[in-house]
Image (cartoon, rainbow, N blue to C red; front, side):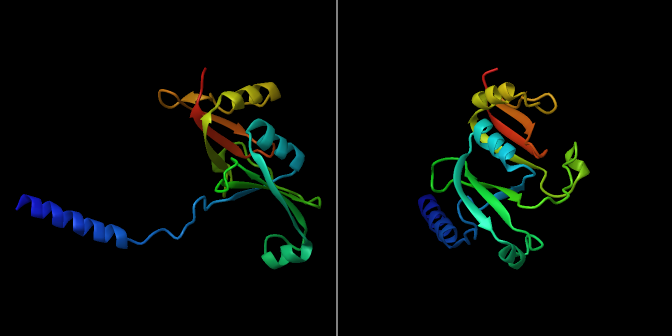
Length: 173
Protein backbone atom coordinates (compact mmCIF):
# COMPACT_ATOMS: atom_id res chain seq x y z
CA UNK A 1 0.00 0.00 0.00
CA UNK A 2 2.84 2.36 0.88
CA UNK A 3 4.49 1.82 -2.53
CA UNK A 4 1.17 2.55 -4.32
CA UNK A 5 0.90 5.85 -2.43
CA UNK A 6 4.42 6.88 -3.47
CA UNK A 7 3.74 5.88 -7.09
CA UNK A 8 0.47 7.85 -7.21
CA UNK A 9 2.19 10.84 -5.57
CA UNK A 10 5.00 10.79 -8.14
CA UNK A 11 2.52 10.56 -11.04
CA UNK A 12 0.40 13.35 -9.54
CA UNK A 13 3.41 15.67 -9.05
CA UNK A 14 4.79 14.87 -12.50
CA UNK A 15 1.44 15.76 -14.10
CA UNK A 16 1.19 19.12 -12.34
CA UNK A 17 4.83 20.00 -12.88
CA UNK A 18 4.61 19.27 -16.62
CA UNK A 19 1.44 21.38 -16.91
CA UNK A 20 2.67 24.28 -14.80
CA UNK A 21 2.77 27.59 -16.63
CA UNK A 22 6.26 28.51 -17.69
CA UNK A 23 7.61 32.03 -17.46
CA UNK A 24 7.07 34.28 -20.45
CA UNK A 25 10.59 35.66 -20.05
CA UNK A 26 13.42 34.46 -22.24
CA UNK A 27 16.86 33.52 -20.96
CA UNK A 28 18.72 36.72 -20.06
CA UNK A 29 15.51 38.72 -20.50
CA UNK A 30 16.89 41.95 -19.07
CA UNK A 31 19.09 44.43 -20.91
CA UNK A 32 19.78 47.68 -19.09
CA UNK A 33 20.65 50.99 -20.70
CA UNK A 34 22.71 53.72 -19.08
CA UNK A 35 22.53 57.28 -20.38
CA UNK A 36 26.09 58.53 -20.53
CA UNK A 37 27.27 62.13 -20.53
CA UNK A 38 30.59 61.12 -22.07
CA UNK A 39 30.53 57.72 -23.77
CA UNK A 40 34.32 57.34 -24.06
CA UNK A 41 34.71 57.52 -20.27
CA UNK A 42 31.82 55.13 -19.75
CA UNK A 43 33.12 52.67 -22.34
CA UNK A 44 36.57 52.77 -20.73
CA UNK A 45 35.01 52.06 -17.32
CA UNK A 46 32.75 49.20 -18.44
CA UNK A 47 35.18 47.58 -20.89
CA UNK A 48 38.67 48.21 -19.51
CA UNK A 49 37.91 48.19 -15.78
CA UNK A 50 34.94 45.83 -15.44
CA UNK A 51 35.76 43.64 -18.46
CA UNK A 52 32.62 43.83 -20.63
CA UNK A 53 33.03 43.23 -24.37
CA UNK A 54 31.78 44.98 -27.50
CA UNK A 55 28.57 43.51 -28.90
CA UNK A 56 27.61 46.11 -31.48
CA UNK A 57 26.56 49.68 -32.17
CA UNK A 58 23.11 51.09 -32.88
CA UNK A 59 22.52 54.53 -34.39
CA UNK A 60 19.06 55.97 -33.80
CA UNK A 61 18.11 58.88 -36.04
CA UNK A 62 15.88 61.73 -34.85
CA UNK A 63 12.77 60.52 -36.68
CA UNK A 64 12.99 56.99 -35.25
CA UNK A 65 13.80 58.29 -31.75
CA UNK A 66 10.57 60.31 -31.86
CA UNK A 67 8.58 57.27 -33.08
CA UNK A 68 10.04 55.16 -30.29
CA UNK A 69 9.08 57.74 -27.70
CA UNK A 70 12.53 57.57 -26.12
CA UNK A 71 13.67 61.10 -26.94
CA UNK A 72 12.21 64.34 -28.20
CA UNK A 73 13.29 64.01 -31.83
CA UNK A 74 16.98 63.84 -30.82
CA UNK A 75 19.30 61.28 -32.44
CA UNK A 76 21.41 59.05 -30.23
CA UNK A 77 24.15 56.45 -30.32
CA UNK A 78 24.06 53.11 -28.47
CA UNK A 79 27.13 51.01 -27.70
CA UNK A 80 26.01 47.50 -26.81
CA UNK A 81 28.28 45.59 -24.43
CA UNK A 82 28.08 41.94 -23.41
CA UNK A 83 29.30 40.15 -20.30
CA UNK A 84 30.74 37.06 -22.01
CA UNK A 85 31.34 35.42 -25.40
CA UNK A 86 28.18 33.35 -25.00
CA UNK A 87 25.36 34.09 -27.45
CA UNK A 88 23.05 34.08 -24.40
CA UNK A 89 25.08 36.76 -22.61
CA UNK A 90 23.06 39.62 -21.17
CA UNK A 91 23.79 43.06 -22.59
CA UNK A 92 24.36 46.52 -21.22
CA UNK A 93 23.69 49.54 -23.44
CA UNK A 94 25.66 52.77 -23.12
CA UNK A 95 23.55 55.53 -24.67
CA UNK A 96 24.94 58.91 -25.68
CA UNK A 97 23.08 61.79 -27.27
CA UNK A 98 24.41 63.80 -30.19
CA UNK A 99 23.36 67.06 -28.61
CA UNK A 100 24.21 68.97 -25.49
CA UNK A 101 21.20 68.58 -23.22
CA UNK A 102 21.11 69.63 -19.61
CA UNK A 103 21.30 66.41 -17.64
CA UNK A 104 20.52 65.90 -14.01
CA UNK A 105 23.44 64.45 -12.03
CA UNK A 106 23.11 61.24 -10.06
CA UNK A 107 22.92 62.01 -6.36
CA UNK A 108 25.30 60.90 -3.67
CA UNK A 109 22.97 58.28 -2.19
CA UNK A 110 20.32 56.08 -3.79
CA UNK A 111 17.45 57.41 -1.66
CA UNK A 112 17.89 60.88 -3.22
CA UNK A 113 16.64 59.95 -6.70
CA UNK A 114 13.95 57.72 -8.17
CA UNK A 115 14.46 55.11 -10.85
CA UNK A 116 17.34 52.81 -11.61
CA UNK A 117 20.16 53.69 -9.25
CA UNK A 118 22.52 50.76 -9.36
CA UNK A 119 23.39 47.52 -11.08
CA UNK A 120 24.45 44.34 -9.32
CA UNK A 121 26.97 42.26 -11.24
CA UNK A 122 27.94 38.78 -10.05
CA UNK A 123 31.48 37.87 -11.03
CA UNK A 124 33.73 34.89 -10.38
CA UNK A 125 36.53 37.04 -9.01
CA UNK A 126 36.94 40.66 -7.95
CA UNK A 127 40.74 40.46 -8.11
CA UNK A 128 41.31 41.91 -11.60
CA UNK A 129 38.57 44.50 -11.08
CA UNK A 130 40.10 45.67 -7.79
CA UNK A 131 43.50 45.87 -9.49
CA UNK A 132 42.04 48.06 -12.28
CA UNK A 133 40.08 50.20 -9.79
CA UNK A 134 43.25 50.90 -7.79
CA UNK A 135 45.31 51.56 -10.92
CA UNK A 136 42.71 54.04 -12.25
CA UNK A 137 42.34 55.74 -8.86
CA UNK A 138 38.62 54.97 -8.69
CA UNK A 139 37.20 55.52 -5.23
CA UNK A 140 35.36 52.56 -3.73
CA UNK A 141 32.16 53.45 -1.92
CA UNK A 142 31.73 53.03 1.81
CA UNK A 143 34.07 50.47 3.33
CA UNK A 144 34.02 48.14 0.36
CA UNK A 145 35.06 45.56 -0.49
CA UNK A 146 33.10 44.04 2.37
CA UNK A 147 33.18 40.34 3.19
CA UNK A 148 29.72 38.75 2.83
CA UNK A 149 30.60 35.09 3.30
CA UNK A 150 33.70 32.90 3.43
CA UNK A 151 34.96 33.80 -0.07
CA UNK A 152 32.28 36.27 -1.21
CA UNK A 153 32.84 40.00 -1.19
CA UNK A 154 30.83 43.02 -2.23
CA UNK A 155 32.57 45.91 -4.00
CA UNK A 156 30.72 49.15 -4.67
CA UNK A 157 31.99 51.75 -7.15
CA UNK A 158 30.39 54.43 -9.32
CA UNK A 159 30.64 54.70 -13.08
CA UNK A 160 31.72 58.04 -14.63
CA UNK A 161 28.14 59.37 -14.43
CA UNK A 162 27.61 58.31 -10.83
CA UNK A 163 25.64 55.08 -11.34
CA UNK A 164 26.35 52.69 -8.48
CA UNK A 165 27.89 49.41 -9.62
CA UNK A 166 27.72 46.62 -7.04
CA UNK A 167 30.05 43.73 -7.81
CA UNK A 168 29.86 40.47 -5.89
CA UNK A 169 32.43 37.72 -6.16
CA UNK A 170 35.44 35.96 -4.70
CA UNK A 171 38.34 38.13 -3.62
CA UNK A 172 41.86 37.44 -2.37
CA UNK A 173 42.47 40.29 0.08
